[in-house]
Length: 105
Length: 316
Image (cartoon, rainbow over all chains, first blue to last red; front, side, top):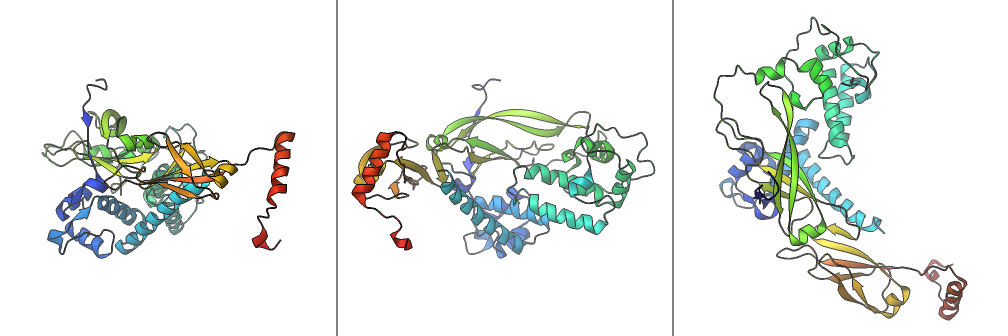
């Protein structure tokens, strides 16, 4: 099958276009609602909405939860530790990016 | 296949006690975990460490592995001697990822039996499940984010052949890269992930977008930065300069009395979005070289005319 015949696939940008409900997030990350509630409690993800039934999560939550689960599984970190690690990693990423700005010249 | 020296991989001696091995694993796992590590080969190292620990942490497997003898060197051509594991019964499955993720070396020693049994031809139950979500990276140029683009990707994945053994399969996809996508964002392609089991639908494919390093521009989020060399007289006296941007050349006015590292903002010329980012042009004063006598003479005259001490603030 050459390039033209192959169908052109389009997708949504997780971080921009997508907002998930609690159920959708459970399915996307293969976790239970109790797991998500714990993650929310410790700040791994922060939904908008007054209660679990009306929670709406930004697409980036999928990435954070998958990361938190890997940290728990592989490094023995609990939810509180994972939330801290993810925030610090985000800050480091931003700093690295900013640093590159001054290294190129 | 090559012999793998699990003790060397974990950085422990062959007679290390179990708790030392556990400590070594924790330290290495933290260092090379792909979510945390910036080492270039983190993912490969993490897998290697995981495999080594899988064997050394289990006294049964460790003893069996030791039976091979201490004379093998890492990387040597290796074939397990017949009946090398006589008397050992490996209880329990594998923690974490399935055995398909381990090396050929591991497979040849510990992989027989356990893995294929689970997916053996004998399975009678009908079983339906949604396929796994899979993840891959797509590298694009900055210009692709400005205009959108199409990319052709070839992805490899492991699946079980008819004989129950894992094998690598390739597939090629044509993917639309949407305009305005940013570094690190993910494009979700519905049902392009792992095949479903039975009547289960396929999982999704998440593509992480990475920008190729650009020779001219530096990207931070939505904003784009350009280092613009200017001559000293252009900065001091002001000038109108042609400047490259990702969407074409523009004329830009450099105000007089500009100093080095001054940032000039071209609003809205960053990555497109409802609120587009900006393009920041950073002035870098470039000195003409003093190669000929005429050049040097010009500089000396410069020095005479200006009576300029850049170090007055330093008290010297």
